[in-house]
Image (cartoon, protein in one colour):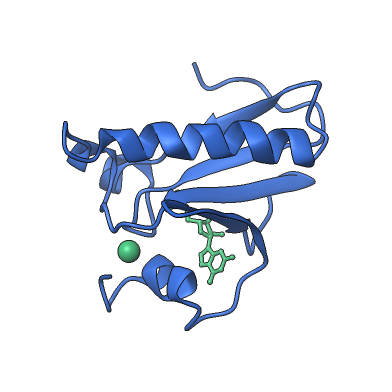
Length: 114
Ligand code: 5GP
Ligand code: ZN
């Protein structure tokens, strides 16, 4: 745990959140400022700062996050589709430096960025 990290504090229960999923490696909770009817943040419990820090030692955790994405999407009724977004670093618009994936859905989403 990184004691200066907001999401580590949320995972640890020091800061409250609306949890939607948890297993040994992954934690997921509702975004405080939702951009769609469903907006869940899915993250590894292990502190990895951002996507540029993914490597051979920790990449299995990314797979675990995406297994959780599929389970949460199903539980949230997103059969018609959803979007997964990761912002990395300053230019990528990342505001919390603990790797996380935004799972967004529940309505027809806006134009794609790419
Ligand atoms: P980023 O900008 O780093 O990709 O995403 C960070 C996300 O965390 C934002 O969408 C923001 O709304 C969310 N967020 C920031 N602080 C909190 C918090 O204390 N609780 C919850 N549930 N979400 C937060
Ligand atoms: Zn952290």
